[in-house]
Length: 96
Image 1 (tube, one colour):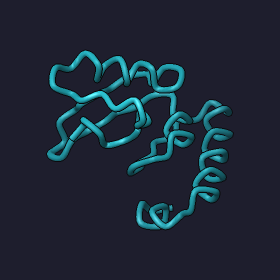
Image 2 (tube, rainbow, N blue to C red; image 1 turned 135 degrees about the vertical axis):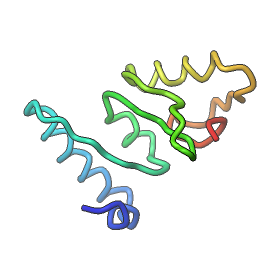
Image 3 (cartoon, rainbow, N blue to C red; image 1 turned 60 degrees about the horizontal axis):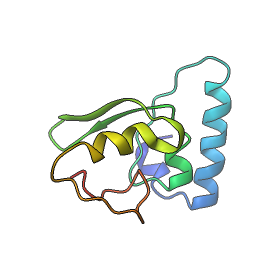
Image 4 (cartoon, one colour; image 1 turned 90 degrees about the horizontal axis):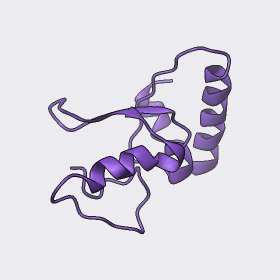
């Protein structure tokens, strides 16, 4: 499925796709996904993350941690990144 097709999925369909992806990963295969503004549920389905900003600069690369804790801790350690407790780890808040 191309990125354009995934962009039109509603929340339920996206969840079903991610369950299928997780089943594939659980067989020992590597799956690479491109995702834009995921829900918290979808975001937390990933084991590792390579987060790029426009231009291809790496912002974060590594294991997500339970509930995205590694990513959240990474950004809490970056000076000038606002903390929004109401935002999930996949929000665009502070990572532009």
